[in-house]
Amino acid sequence: MSNPITIEDIAAALGVSKTTVSRAISGKGRIGEATRTRVLEYIEKNNYRPNVVAKGLAQRRTYNIAVVWPGDYIIEDLPFFQKCLVGMSEVTSGYGYDIIVSVVAGDDISSLKRIIENRKVDGVILTRTLVDDKPADYLLESGVPFVAIGDSLNEQIITVDNDIFDACRELTSIIIGKGHTKLALIGGSSNHMVTRNRYGGFVAAFEKAGKKVDESLIFLDQGNEQKLIEIVKHLVAEKVDGVICMDDKLAGHVIGICRYSNIKIPRDIKLASFCNSNTLENAAVSVTSLNFDDRNLGAVATRMLMELIDGESVKSRKLKNYEVIMKESTK
Image (cartoon, rainbow, N blue to C red; front, side, top):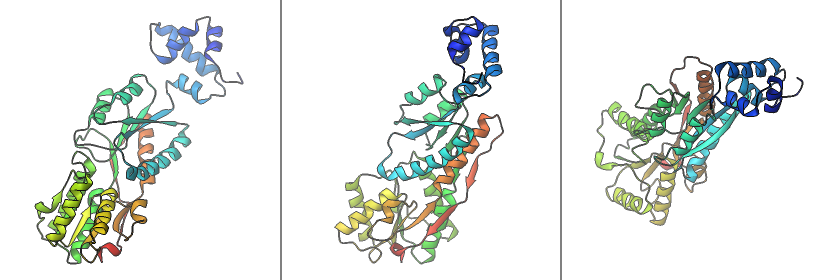
């Protein structure tokens, strides 16, 4: 055949119904194993110029992967997901694969289940890991190949991530080395593994310096702007040396609060962020922060997934490609 075969072509050539061919291809419905084998062998034998669909039928692959985005993402999260997705797309195109984006909102993983149970993908990439990680637990139970971006408490899950712990430890150590030891830490959800790693890096920097963290200056599960106003005013009154925010969204809020309250950065309070983005690049004051290669992170995660799909042995990885950017906010 010089043209891609169709279900009608297969049915006519083998003297069976289109329904029988569909069942043989999908693996669903009642059909004898001998008939299923005949159909798949015919596809493989006659598919001289395989398109993606025909190739997938012959090899029982969909040539799709799913990328799971959290449904609670905010505008500040988009650059991370977009850069990861660009890196993923660059790799999948080389394998002849396409990407299906699945949005998981909270504990509702119904959309992910639908994709897996309907056999729409050959593998999955999770873009966020959690302490109580229902999507990862479900994928592990389903047996579908998957890679998670971020650390996991479950050693069975194959993960890849930037070395968040070391990066946060290094940035905090630099600030402590400048003599700023009374530092506050403001972070997001404690159910996010990235929050856990950022906190760990912060604490490790104090331990390395022989200092003790003041737990009364740690504020996790933050996001409400009114609450942040109270926290910032409290920290200024306590005469802390500085504030480290776990992400650019929180740092942006702190900058806005300081500007509105006539609190000068860095004169009245130092500020740093464990995550950089366009939000901070365009801020009124340049902010000391961490840069990560999110595009490369997405690409590495996808290559690992492709190896898993091909049946290869894959181990979790930690990427060291980060950069500490010292700017005006911590002078």
